[in-house]
Image 1 (cartoon, rainbow over the protein chains, first blue to last red):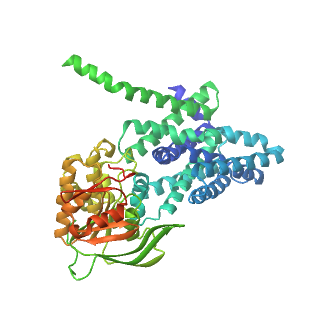
Image 2 (tube, each protein chain N blue to C red):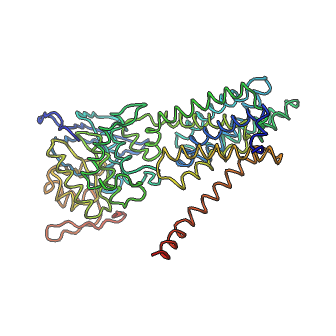
Image 3 (cartoon, rainbow over the protein chains, first blue to last red):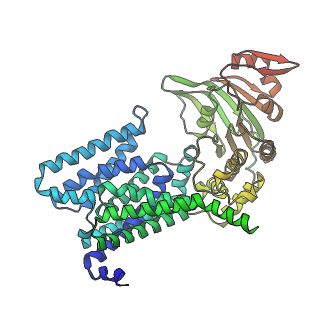
Length: 281
Length: 255
């Protein structure tokens, strides 16, 4: 048992566990929409786009979550607006915006030599440096993201399934798209410190994709996706503690491993059952 | 679903007067005037690109006309084409039927027991009650069409606009549609069906609107589908065999 309890003696590990649980919940619930609506590329764009916000926040000594939140929401608005017109395709609009935002972050970092170490932590995650106030902000952000998603689930799922019908029913589809991007940004922001900028996408996509393999219900998928995200987070964090490897990488590899196990089970499952039935009957 | 609309037989469900709709330079509807009476099934026919979907979207208020006026006097319901929806979405047939009542349910709330009961009734009306718990992607094409019709019924509208609801439909689906449409007409509602199927619309619609950007003809089938009018709308070669019009236009995709 001490393998499980030993790390909990440390304050930083207790905080890290809470941070990873929040990450699992927020990105699991929102990740369901990322997977169902094929928003992985947009999600990737948003994670990169928040980078300059983080850099500025570090330089000003402000909360990085706040910096990422502000820039992320602006980028979400930009993507939604540019892709609304027909002049530029959505993929192209995203490609332009996210590369530009990340480049801005790189330029800012190069002018702020003193902060380069902190910023590297943010790219790859530094979960052991989560402060109490970071945790409060992450908890508040998770609560807002999850509650809003649950309250808007019927509208968001209608738009995801049949956009034409949502428009015909006179729903403000553009606004709701924007809200969804905003909520995804919140999930990204929650995950940033635990997982790091570059790997956040995995938390948005992999647990939800795993959940989709085993359920045909949206609410179940969201719950399961959150549970899988939390489980992978906790397991990954313990692996990181005992084997002294980077936490973000350990968590992402754990969630990936779970995906492949479930994928194999689902692929092989029917065949195995069929064989069992045919031998028994 | 439940109560028929308040009877005001004298008024039309919708009136269009000189309506022109354009996408940028492209005029999709040109000077369209129509009166859609209550208690009727109206067929909307015409070649691809004739403006059938545009007309339905204009009636829904999704598009605003460049000129002309539209007066829709009753609540409107819609059934979009089958193609664009994301059928792999983790929703059941019942979930989709419930969507039709979302506006009634309102923001931030979930459909209650009464809504679920109506949704089951709507699925029953199209012969799919036993499929209520099935994920929508596992349904056949005809069953998907019927689920979307059940969702439209859930809107409890008095003017129902169905965009190519029967393209590629099987016999069971066609029968379920016809029965449902006739029931709606009996309740005093107006159903507009856009279709490529001239035979079906001539047999089952009270009125036909032959559209090709402009209204070529509008009236009872025999009158609306005269050989000259059809030739005007479709432009292509057409054979008349024993009083039956057979279209052989190029570029017309049958479904």
